[in-house]
Length: 113
Length: 115
Image (cartoon, rainbow over all chains, first blue to last red; front, side, top):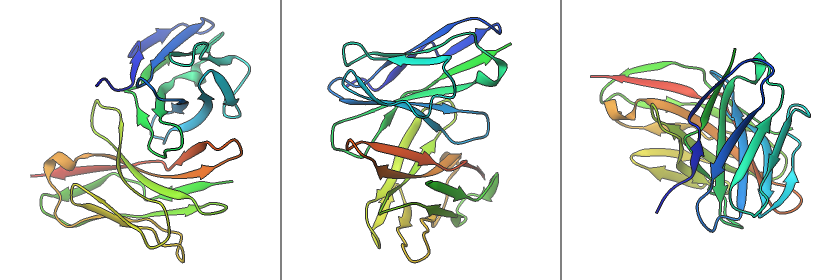
């Protein structure tokens, strides 16, 4: 079966542009997480969905960051008016309800010029 | 808040050498502990885990023991191979209200194994 997929794998944006990053979780996985991984750092939690409900968005660094999962499967992380400090790898992970193993996608590397 | 501290790399070893990557944590309650591995060009993969004190997680020759008294979860392997070259992340999971799990990661330790 397919794992977690993310697109695009690489994104270059000019400062001030809006970007949208997509995550396709493993089919049937109820939980979906977004993380931000800066260069040389470990992943930092951004937000969490259970089905279509966004239960925690405490890790989103500013109101320029917005995530959605309208039908409880595919999720999109949107960053408005990108800044250079937004440059990072954005990771998506999914898991079955009640389990502690998260399956990670390959990430989207965002570079803001 | 919860945090994970792991030794900074890079760590360079010769093939067949013994590996230890130290990891200590701070958490409320009783977290589950994990080691994730990220091979070049690939996504994070779960390497092993332990869910309670004195549990030993093991996989692919790697081992780590959940030590509550020292709040540690050190990763070890008796004989590393070139194919083990990767970045290793120590992590913990805490269960929050609503029943979900937030994972807190360490900074990552890059391991390079030379023939």
